[in-house]
Image 1 (cartoon, rainbow, N blue to C red):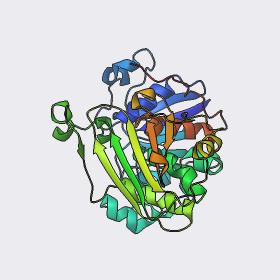
Image 2 (cartoon, rainbow, N blue to C red; image 1 turned 45 degrees about the vertical axis):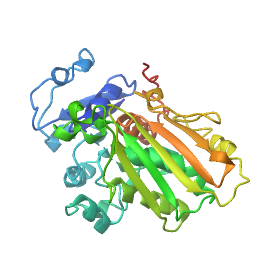
Image 3 (cartoon, rainbow, N blue to C red; image 1 turned 120 degrees about the vertical axis):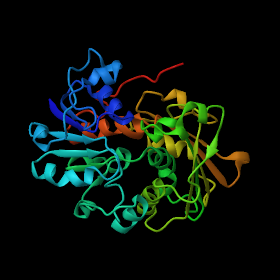
Image 4 (cartoon, rainbow, N blue to C red; image 1 turned 120 degrees about the horizontal axis):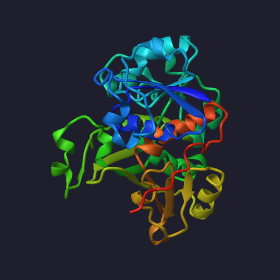
Length: 343
């Protein structure tokens, strides 16, 4: 049984971790911290967990984690990097669901996140936790940087094309849309349903924090810099991401449907839909799946890939549990076999 702790379990990714771990057959949740909710029963804050956990929140004292094998950070950016060194010294393995260790280049990270990095010595050794790309490294990792939600949808969609050198890497475009839960649980006028309902907008067009994270991995896949345009959008729904990806083919004879089906044939959480399909975010809501479809409009030189995930599951907590399973030698789908919610 894996003994697990969660630091910062009051946000949307925190409650998703609690939901998944509370029924995980090989994980035992030992401690969960919150400065603002210390002493309060978890089920009082999240009534969906009533009957599934008796834990109460405690102050984030490192001593609480001494009996843990693994700690998840479900905290704002900039928190994990201050506490990771001490936990690693205690022999505790870590999965960070924030962005503290996703970007390898310290100046790039500091530019996009607007603060000095507290433990840059861990940037290089942290494993980027996209199982479909770094499965073997994740198995032996002490520190895993869980990918962002947009990067997960975008990278899984582009991966087979870039790996096989089939597209012009100077003209990659991702047009992505997310529900409001991607903005977190903190009260914000801009994400109130009265503000986003019956509306739709692009945001962060000059630059989004997930862009350097995506570009970093695309560069690694292509083995040279890429030119990548990323435009996120906010849509009036709670969960879900749809990423529409565009690239210009260098080789038009390849059977792209067969390529994707072959690449993801053994991946438990990537579902390549039949030719002509259009993935829906509702088809993955509450599950750890990514569903993908590939198109060549008018049989032209442009390939269009549609990729959908639940931003809180495969885009956050579910992928973190998938990484935990790999780190502890469990079946990858252990505790992650939930069927998506419909309607």
